[in-house]
Length: 339
Image (cartoon, rainbow, N blue to C red; front, side, top):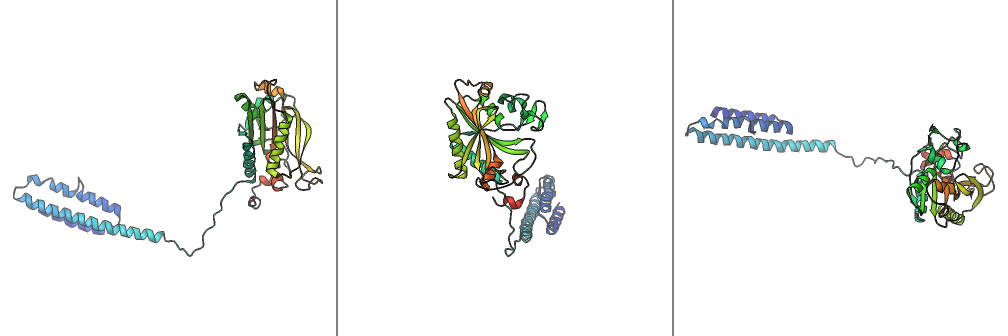
């Protein structure tokens, strides 16, 4: 047994000296000193020794254990120091090298103005409400007093998924859904993407953004509508902004109007952007049609309201003096870096 202990000591020291990584070192420690290790196996046989041999072998076994443990400790420290040196060498930084410039993203001009418009209406007590872009025919047309034979339902104007499902042509369906769920007073705006089968040019796109608003309460009049929209335009464009209201027709409002802002490019003289008119139409508005209120379960004899809708792209074009709507969707970095 004495000879076996000496052999374990010699073999363990040699193996530990040759060990070149911490994982292998831990395996050697378990091999010799673990519960099922070689030294433990020897000690389990001490019960077979005589009373005279037992202290001698016990002392020798403790010396072997101490020697191995000390060697493990020494080798562990050496390997950790070696590992640290290798890590420091691999992660060395040359502070004299020039830094790398990282491109930091920022908001798209449409998002910038969208957020600004939201803040303006939130300041006037409006809530922001969202709704589905793939919409039922009922909410997009029927509930808004747009009959089956109306031109807006033509496939040349509307993208149809099937006979009953369309890509929404406006965010007005959100107004209907809100009136179905809430009781007046209601004061909301509903921003989002809309889709129409329009030819792409400087002022039209088949995909664009709308922000629509709705107010329903007792005693709401056309003067409330006009005052709200004038305050909005002056908050967005400045106190010197010039607007005009023109009579118009929308199936879901009566009476109806369109609101124009004086052309930012020609200041009313007429140019390509305003198509020679001197004004740019930015939104349509009017008093909510009594039939629409009825469709949503609201008594038109007790309540009245106004609604408006604007194309975000046209508002942003006026805001930043941009003359072509296509620039918003072409992802030209030279254009986007200006904002």
